[in-house]
Picture 1 (cartoon, rainbow, N blue to C red):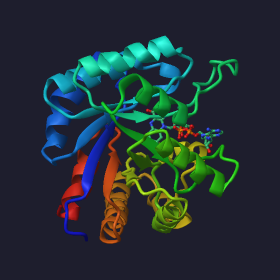
Picture 2 (cartoon, rainbow, N blue to C red):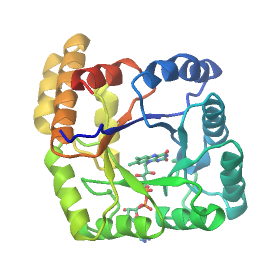
Picture 3 (cartoon, rainbow, N blue to C red):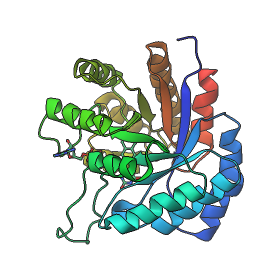
Length: 279
Ligand code: FAD
C-alpha cells in the first residue's frame, strides 16, 4: 500500500419516499461519515427524473457541513435549465460534481438527443470556471455503446481535455481489467486519477440484471459460488464481503488512488468492507 491514505467516497441514489430520504440524511450519512470519506455523491435519475430530490439531498447535506457532489447530465433539458441548476449548487456552497451523459429512461422516446459528457464538462467550465471539481465516468470493461476499446479511452481523454479533474469507474470485479485500463489511459496521455468504483455484493439478482446492461462483468466463478448458496442469504453476504474486501485490498496494494463505494444507500456492507481494509 502507498504511504498516503487512499481517497474514499460514497455514492447514494435519491430514495423515492420522504421517509427514505430522511433516513439517508439523518442516520445513514452520519454513520458513513465516521469513516472519513472525502465526499458523498448523489445520482441523478436518467433524463433528469430525480432533479428535485437529488438537489434537495445535496443542498440539505451541504448545509449540514458534508462535502457532497451532485451527479448531473443534460438529459432532455436545455442550457438554461442546466445553467440554473449549476448556479443553485454554487449558491448552496457545492463545489464538486459528477458530470455525465446519462441514459434516457425507457418510455421517454428516442426524440431527445443525449449530450455527451465532454460537452457538459465544457459547459460547466464555461459557466463557472474552476469553481467545481469535476469527476467523470470511466469504464475499465468499456462502455457498452462504445465503438471500441481505444475509442472509449479517447472519449475519456476528451472529457479530461474539456476540464474534468478526475474519473470514477463503473464497478468491476476483474482487477486486471482496471489496471490494464489505467496503463492504456496513461499511454493515451491521461494523467489524472481514475478512482475505482466498487459495488458491494448485496442483492445478487439485482446486481446480475443491472450488470448485463451497464457493461460490468460478474466473473463466472463468483456467479457459480453465489448461485450455489441458493436462499442462504447469510452465506451470500459473507462471501460477497470477502470477495469485495479482497478486491479492494488488491487495488489499494497495487496503487489504485482510492475507492468510490456504490453504497446502495446502505451502511453495513460498505462499512464492513471498509473496516476489513483497516484503513
Ligand atoms: P459519455 O462519456 O458521454 O459516453 C457515452 C458513450 O458515447 C460511450 O459509449 C462513449 O464511448 C461514447 N462517446 C463519448 N463521448 C463521445 C463523443 N464526444 N462523440 C461520440 N461518442 C462519444 N447514470 C445516470 O443516469 N445517473 C447517474 O447519476 C449516473 N452516475 C454514474 C456515475 C458513475 C461513476 C458511472 C461510471 C456511471 C454513472 N451513470 C449514471 C451511468 C452513465 O450515465 C451511463 O453509463 C451512460 O450510458 C454514459 O454516461 P457517460 O457520462 O459515461 O457518457
